[in-house]
Length: 146
Image 1 (cartoon, rainbow, N blue to C red):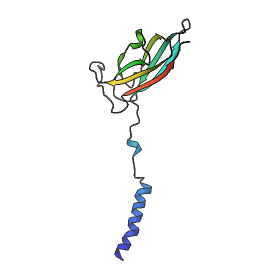
Image 2 (cartoon, helix red, strand yellow; image 1 turned 90 degrees about the vertical axis):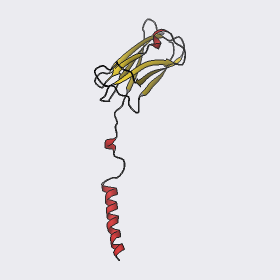
Image 3 (cartoon, rainbow, N blue to C red; image 1 turned 45 degrees about the vertical axis):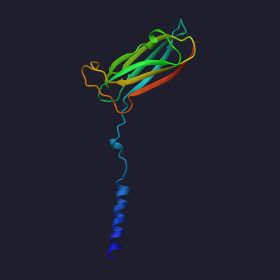
Image 4 (tube, rainbow, N blue to C red; image 1 turned 120 degrees about the vertical axis):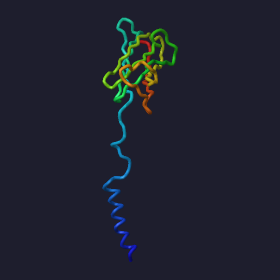
């Protein structure tokens, strides 16, 4: 008879833990800040419709600063300033904007790429970090001449 009296108490305790305490992953401890947030805008020149101005914006939600390398890649070889690479210190309170101007003579896929790297003497006022996830991101677009 003694073992049967323990059973209702154990069932109630188990139900209490499952339904009231909601045992499982705790969402309050999950970090939802984005290491790198990018945006890309493309504008055509009024006089020369084949000339493109690409504006890339970069920001972070992390409290720590990071060294970011920002560049363009394409599916077709381009020339001139298309291959300019920017390296900057990206902090939460200072978003960055980059510009590229280049001609588009045929249909091409391009990607704006941001990569978090380890490089010294870029973030001079702060310690830079490399996040475990989200340290490489890109945006792809298809361009064609007008």
